[in-house]
Image 1 (cartoon, rainbow, N blue to C red):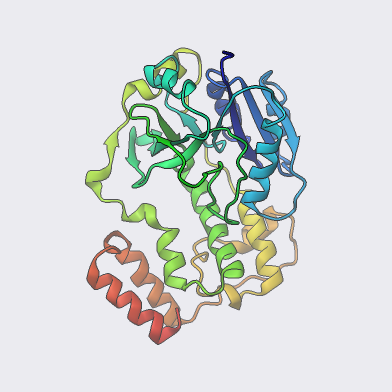
Image 2: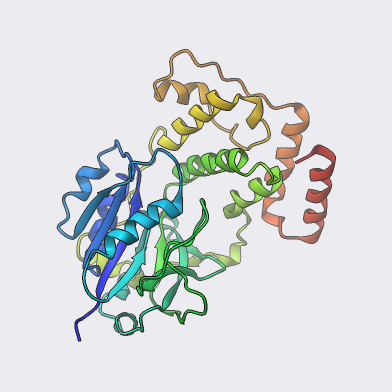
Length: 333
């Protein structure tokens, strides 16, 4: 029986800040790394071409649509003959270093086709040497049986999840998430997410959007744990160090928000939590020389968002949830 081919599926758009590290670590365990690039202009494509295991494909879509990009990744993977194990990771993620050559890795390679592989998802803060564990295991892997992939436009499953499929839950192998290693980049991305939600899911409450995209401020202190050495040691020994990630002066997500502000108007976003940065300065960095941007918030909105910010840590308490519900009714939030 032929050994299964392990194929990593990764969509990218302007991921040069971390892509080289991602491809270096992924090359240790993947037979193929399929990269679907969506109009990057930061050198990401050139980085991807440096790695022999990469199959680079083009995602020419101008819109954000997760099922669409996963479909083209899965279709490309299915061009490869033989049994396939699909591992779907973003560029800011990596399997823990102790996965290489582990017993669980051998188990994964011998799973039945149609099995969904659910990993712990750990959010790392390398500069603090700590992490927190996401509450739910995530379906990052699938032993491919040709099932159709379906999903939602945003925060979609990345692999097919057939009905009544078998599941495997690795205990030691985890997926490390480095989004929070660059806190300013994360905030920029979450500003974009909030605007996207407000445009595309107008039925969602303003408070619901705020609470979701500020969840990192509600993590209890006892949930932060020290990063085990074995999660990164093998990578470090082989010259890959995830430390030293440097924040940039601005991010492409903010340029896309500027485009949204131009299209929908400032008042449309007055109740969205994006007014913590100097948009006039960002607009200049994005190439806009004559754009007019002024914070459109009313005093009542300023007070409400002061409340949301200062209660996020306690947002799961019953009292805060009751007050949130009242605010939604009284101020149409």
